[in-house]
Length: 265
Length: 245
Image 1 (cartoon, chains in turn yellow, purple):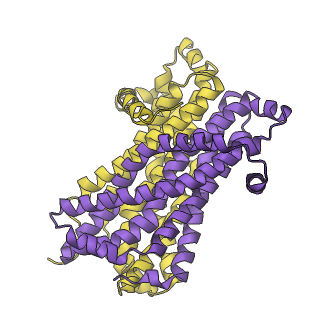
Image 2 (tube, each protein chain N blue to C red; image 1 turned 180 degrees about the horizontal axis):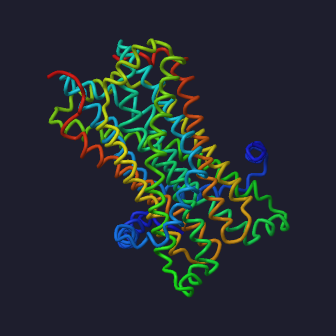
Image 3 (cartoon, rainbow over the protein chains, first blue to last red; image 1 turned 60 degrees about the vertical axis):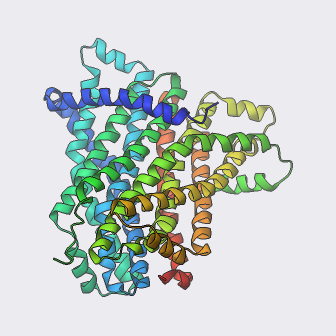
């Protein structure tokens, strides 16, 4: 039976291991040794796009709708419905999108990697790779990280567009307090290219952590079919906490001292 | 859907053999969720509504309005979202992994042979426990969200009186009740999805892992779709929520 302190203790335990494993994988990618398996990386990127893109965008679309509805009603309540664009610009780009992206990525991609690698580990395929003279960490983990780095920025930027479209639908067409032009004026005033870069930086940091956590738990899975399921569940715990912490640190670092809003002098 | 109906029927029809399992599941979920819950809510509320909104409000020089803003975001929006994400990600995956393991080891079939109904003895207690506990965890999410708001206010060097006065002026019972009932529905969605995926897991070692993967994706999508519908209906039908005092 699990005790009250098992989750935090396990989290602290796993954190060091994951950091070591993650730095090893990232080192393999940076040193270029992963390029020997560049084809495999491209294949992983392709799997990511074909398998996860629609789910990610659908999720982001719902978030955009939600941001729009909340923003529209909130701004109606303070008597400034025309400023709904401000709320949705902040909610979509700066905060909501990285979190939504982190959630769905850890759910779809992170647990997917654990299930896949865990099954390989259980059926001794990883040991077979080693016997064949292929470094399993490079071939399995580093290629996935590189594949994610190739594919995710584009998925993310399209996701930004999807969320914008959804917020527009919710504010202008569903609630309808503000005209299309009035909404878009405020909406584009309260963001610039730097904000997109900051948001992308948050999203990519989350992606990296999620892929590394997934690879770690898959790579070290043990205990038969049941073990794979348990490892998948454990990876979710770590991912959920990491996504929130990265989001908070990102906000503190990027906007903590400077709100970056075109108000006043 | 069929599992939902059968679960509901099994939950209300006597006899009720699931009391003990209900309590143990309740504690299990609580033990798993409390730590991710507190960290996540605090981090999310400090970052998103706390610092971003405080930045804008401090430009206008009315940081005391942050309390009113926190009612809108933390109670209506972020509390339920984080609760759902944590319960689906932590407890839901654990349930799927647990039931999937039993399915793979053919324990579920063995139960049926023994004349024990797996829905009544395994699904119903998890369903009820998740429904209750997701609603209760939402209150903790709101409390920790508020403490994050206080932290944001203190980071900007503001006295807390203004925060509390706008907070309590704007907090309505409707808000909290809606938030909690929404979270119980989230718990129901998560429980049904995760139990279904766990009980239909198949296909050797990869099967349980894949079941967990699909369960958490479907649970997230279902929860967010429901959240959108619920928020829209709530805000459109309760005009008193649309005024900031």
